[in-house]
Length: 220
Image (cartoon, rainbow, N blue to C red; front, side):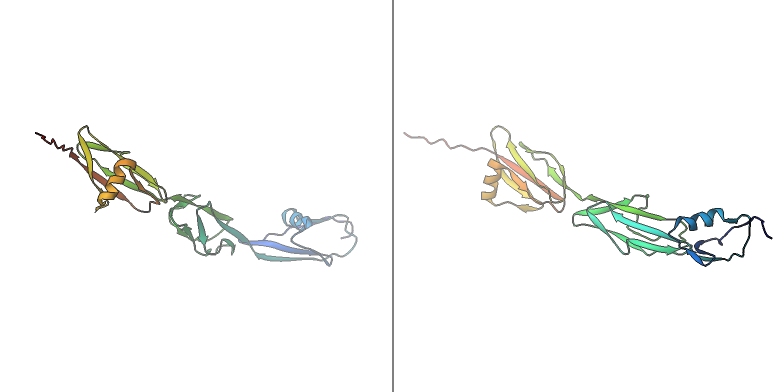
């Protein structure tokens, strides 16, 4: 009736949102604040003195799934997904760089591959990676020592071991992961040590020491 006040409210079904509102032929696009205000508060006509037309379009609610790497790896698959309400996201997989391994996702998921099921909110996570570590095991010899002792080395790292014979002994052999060094290599190791460079696997090192032998020559 003339002079009345009338309010209209817009209630989308579960999983839907108000996409646009047309008021008296004027489209309030979804990017404008009047649309948001109207969708939440409704539209009120005060002191009505003319005909008005309201048209509302509802659409499926969509959510974003965002996946990133914290570094030293990447995420395979669609890293930025737009998923309709109630549907499943696409599978993504955390892929470590060479020399690294996957640890977890920032939300606690422990599997490298993941898929969000029945999406009803914005989601996503960051993949965490850590460098691979390897053990260089020192098998302690008798009559001398090897320094340092058993060590943990990062992928691509290096470690030098030195040999210290007991008094009256000398370095006789050095064995690295089952392979014996040549006499010249042993001689070099005795003076400057043995270096593992760019470590990419577990290793072992051991040595043997022999008693020094001296010759006494009798000259009549």
